[in-house]
View 1 (cartoon, helix red, strand yellow):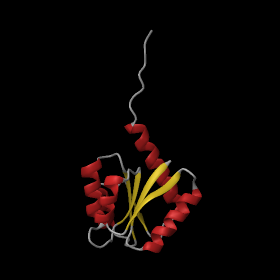
View 2: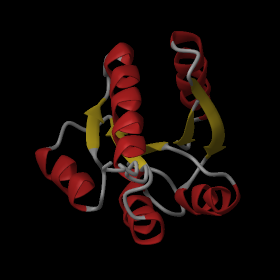
View 3: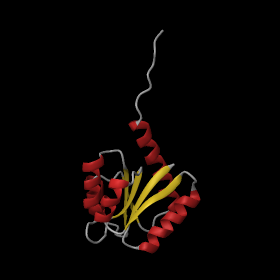
View 4: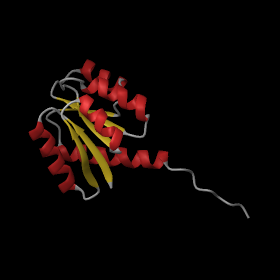
Length: 137
């Protein structure tokens, strides 16, 4: 199972993403939803996730600061995908510099997002797994 956090201040969009992802692939499970970055951080303390989907524009704590705090607290264990409705190269660069692995601009293709979530989660599991012991006989 791939555990997902969605942090977005617009509840209908969070719900639409959750419904799509969980229907599109049985491995995907949205385990945590937050309406701002501070709430997301509090929830991450108690709920491990593999991938965080983060809106850049949120009240209280925006997605840029949330990305930085996730990277500082969890390192590379959590894959981060940010998104926004603003098509701005500087905002994309800022998101990536703050720790996002990928950045999408709305409207984005949901199947592309689904593939990105799976690929990112699978790459984290491969890199974070301990190396297998090999005995030489």
